[in-house]
Length: 149
Image 1 (tube, rainbow, N blue to C red):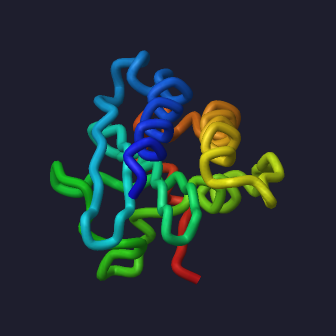
Image 2 (cartoon, rainbow, N blue to C red):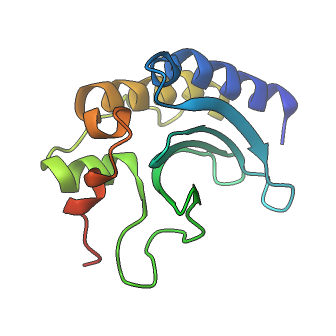
């Protein structure tokens, strides 16, 4: 993955999501690059939740996931645990299910991935601030409205 692209992503995430660490509830940002997939992740860790901003250059996708912390560690489950409980979800889907609101995004079709990064990351930060009070408070109850089906 282009080092320049990951640096831009990391910088924009740090700037737009600084409110998570300002509360003292979340630690971070922590950045990782998966050498197999090329997926670059910037995450913030709370006691009960983790916020994951993901740059997938191969699929030209930028996403924001929220996951539960289980037994003091990030969940190993991708989305649903063995009991059928949602433990990780895309932020807009989490907001839609818990509050029946469909968050809106800035149109980015036709833009390069580098041009999409600041717009999309800023949208995720705005959505988190507007609708993600439980996430910002590190409250795992946001998943109580979730079901697998």
